[in-house]
Image (tube, rainbow, N blue to C red; front, side):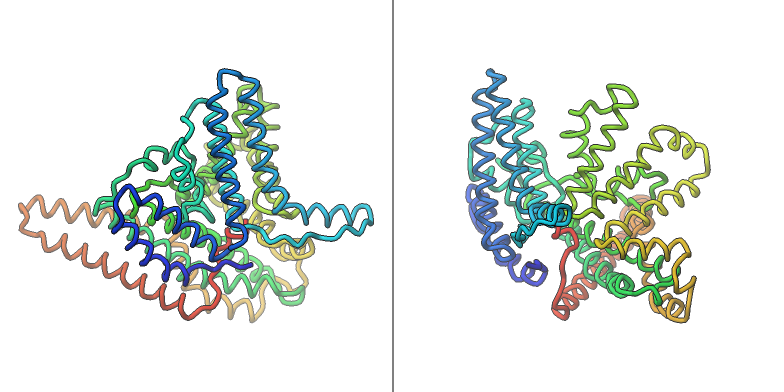
Length: 482
């Protein structure tokens, strides 16, 4: 099932927020929990039971692990039980049909596919609940005694479906008590609106180009068109996913939660190592804390460190989807991370940053080719075209026509993907405050004017986004399928 959700979200949010803020503070977790179940059930009514099972399972495991922590064998067995249940659910629903297909292909068997629908958000909430059990075992957090509060942690609708991945220790205190000031609510609404604009106005529009290009055959796919298509996907997935993260962080802020950041302008990176410190930061942090470091990290020599990187990135690829292309994508980045760790990183620090940036972006764009195209023949077709070996040649009239239609949008996307706009706004505000202080409030009109311009800008984004949502029948988030 495709979960678009945006139109439903705008119908759901006003009712939910009214109920949430009208209710006494002691009732707000109940409102949030029930509202989250309604939101999730709209997209996946059957799999609400699965999420509730995961919630109860890890709640009980957390209590038992804490109770038997002094008996290391029992606590470890309970932790293993929790991990097996979580990974078992994730593996069954996400990878069962993939395994059956490959077994049939390798052995000639005729095992029937289960045709299971992937529960939306399962990759995210299983990682969240696993991190809780692990942290309780490590003694880093105390087991949550209140089942409702734990249920809110697992099911919280703003970030349930596509992140950011929130660890229990990040929000443990906020689950018990939080305050949503007017400043928090204003900042949250602003962040939500920016995220909505990223998704609806930028990601959706450039995504149309990738949809067109990805369906082209050998005779149509020129080198120029292949690069335009991959660039389109690079911008689409960034503004789609970072837009959702902004919306989730904004909604959480409105309610008094402070979720971790998930993106930090990844397309300004000058190495692949830096790129993965800026892209999907909560996933990178999760794998580093719960896989890479427990495997030994960089503490057991270079050879072991490189093996750990290979393992982590194989798992990262598989986490994203049940397909060989995702494993290939993970291995692609593992190779360059290993090269940077061995010698390339030192070279990148000595050359002009622009060359490091070009290297990183080329590697990332080829990576998006593996990630976006699930069929091997399509990947090969695109790689040949990108490298100049396609049947259609370098450019043709259609390539030039397409570029003439999209170059303005590409320019907007480039500016929006860089910290230029943010820095410009911060500079203007700083200058306005300096002028106001220098004139003892005499030029406060300037500051008010900047605030009015900012508010109008956000209102325009909101109106245009809603108009696009109402007009479009299909508004899926790309990461909902992971």
